[in-house]
Length: 153
Image 1 (cartoon, rainbow, N blue to C red):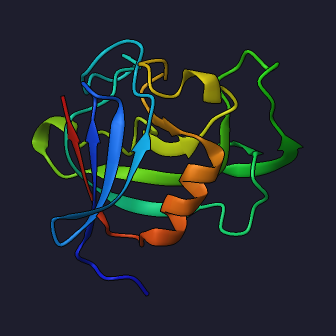
Image 2: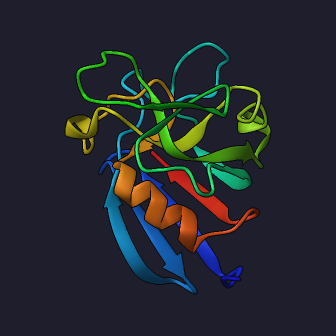
Image 3: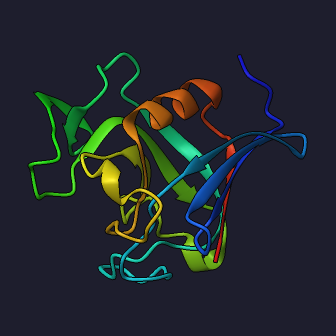
């Protein structure tokens, strides 16, 4: 069991994520936040800013690249040739802790793997925080449910 002192910090401006423990950066990952900008409006496909916690971890022993539909593994491994924004490998489902982002869980905002790894490092998602599949698996194994997540503009 990892320390509760671990936190996740996402910078929308830099398209990066830091995994920290007690203020010390353990690992920095490139990410992809929303192509549509920053916000918490339902149906906006924007990445919400603020304070969150990991409400649920989904995909514990799924193979890298496993596609999830409605948080259920489909049995298929997704590839770049699929134009859809696939949710792959692991899901860290976020729960908003601020009044402005309290709808985050109902908006199905996750940290997840993607079939569009070439877009990582640029704003290209539909609201979620996308990561390379190997990176999201590493992060998933390093944090627990309840870990605090901070998304800064």
